[in-house]
Image (cartoon, rainbow, N blue to C red; front, side, top):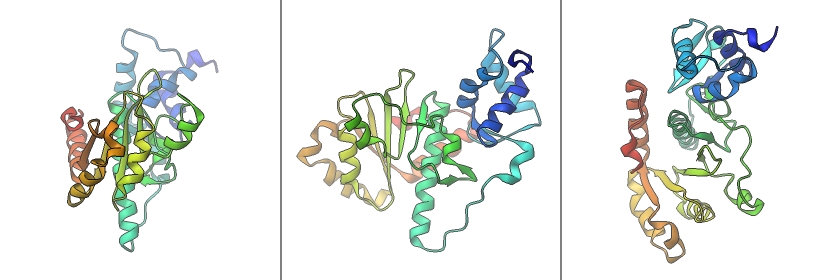
Length: 242
């Protein structure tokens, strides 16, 4: 069958199959052209209408869709058995939320933690980038490729960087941020509210003066609240990023 003969629903299904049954809308928008051209005046609206109305597709997150017949194949995360596992689960959860929010905001998203699972969704299936973009010198790439979550703009440069610090080791995160100080990147530390004073002491060190004014502290509860509001209203509350 020629690619031009695929309907929108058939092309969306192929994209989801390519991505192990799950994909965010932004990835569907990008990859659907492998199977059919974007036709009509508002092709993205057509794609959105198909994933919302065609029973072959089920919404499983903020702008994330799965093939309905494969829902039973989605991974199920085990319940945490100790404090360390509980912390890991929180870490993965915040990462997943930030990936989905970034997708909805129109950014390409990346996480180095590809094997983690958030709400039965592997992170590598809800990020839009499978490989880290080589946007600058290799020595910088090597230092920052393990930042928890990165959002990239349409030109392939990092717009926002997020480090989730459940067991707060802020210094290592801030050192990674410093490697991006020559780019127009906004930095976010996500941690429990009880650790804010520790963060403030660390960011006040002279070595971090270049990024201090560009780095924001947000709590895990703030991320959860924004994510849940966004899921309910289908809109991202951008005041969170100020």
